[in-house]
Image 1 (cartoon, rainbow, N blue to C red):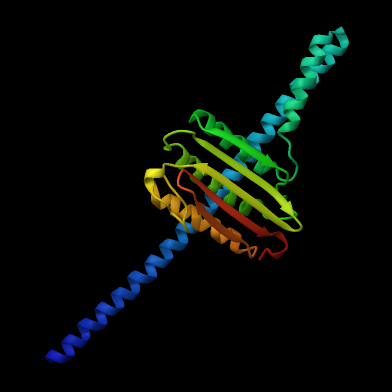
Image 2 (cartoon, rainbow, N blue to C red; image 1 turned 120 degrees about the vertical axis):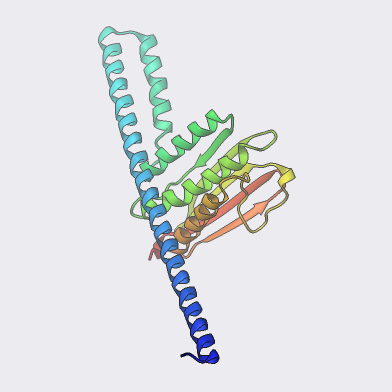
Length: 239
């Protein structure tokens, strides 16, 4: 028979073991969630790349056919129209990562459906030689998702703007979006629309993890009716 003190000690030990097991299971589950999120990002990047490639090739093939037809039949109006379409097609090619180009086109289409003005100033997109595609997509994709989410519930002047450039060996990414001023300021953290907070938080966790791999920085600025995220990635320091 157990003495009272021995029984109490046994109960405490059992409780401690259960707490440790629960903590271990929680960590395993969290790691699995991160891995699943990473796999989903890779899958989305691959799908975007394939969609972009197929669409671009289809439009290029169609355009080549139109050019040949206009030359064969000597129709100046058709030639002018083809030149204009060539210019529009070339605007979609910014150099660097075709995956990021596809991502930008996809997010622009989402903004159009949500009646959000989308603007971009892209002078550089990191390619595979600068940064892993999955990291670049994770950073830009999650920031744009958050920006669109917040802009979609802003009272007026719905807008999302993305600026991407390279200075020396640093990729600077800036994402600006309109937001609802009544939501209050959110200095030091990303603004959201009040929905899907778990996914939103996981998204920012992925952004920080990707940026940290390159010894980069993520900074937020809340101006009341607009929210800005500035990312700097040192592309030589990939782990």
